[in-house]
Image (cartoon, rainbow, N blue to C red):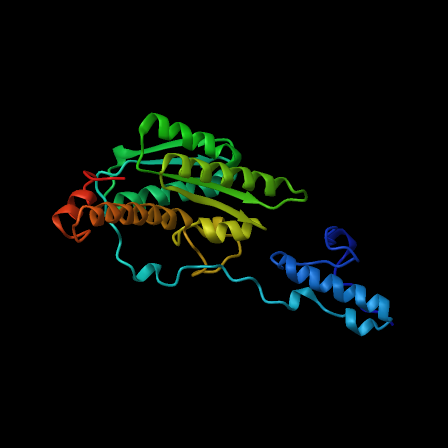
Length: 258
């Protein structure tokens, strides 16, 4: 008697081969190992070696910064911030944008100094970020988008284009450009990373309390922390003690920036 099928044929992952099927979130490396195991069972003639259910593998855990909540909120009044937002999966990117703006204001940024532009998808984020730089001369740019894996490799190339374009802009302009683009296997994974803790149960889907990263808030804080750190480089070069000294206070007010 052979091994029981792991899932209906309609749910098979064609990239895995061998009729193996995988629940959402199973790592590619795990898929490869299971495929090799099934192949080995065929060669050896031992069906027991193929009776591995991928659902028994633990669900991947979201990578979070365990110290983020313990750090004091940075402040940098006078900062000018550009935000480029993709409309694809707007129910998530809009929430990310709102959370980003709230955190920037909490860090001392004036709402009048926050410039937002919307584009169709994540692939267009680099050109939108470039236009923000040219028109508003921001101290930092934040790019927000959601890319979810589909049946083809389209998601890979969209993500590659967005990341490479934003990286090039950052290096060419000597400007902090922060990546708030989520690249997820499923919409549930995207919700878990995009939405703030106060999101509605309907928007949350099947996620549980405590599993929300609030990416907009995280990337906004990262932008301000980076600017403060770069101000510290200038302060050190000027022979001051950094933030807290007269030179550091001038840097924090935006009077001495890279």
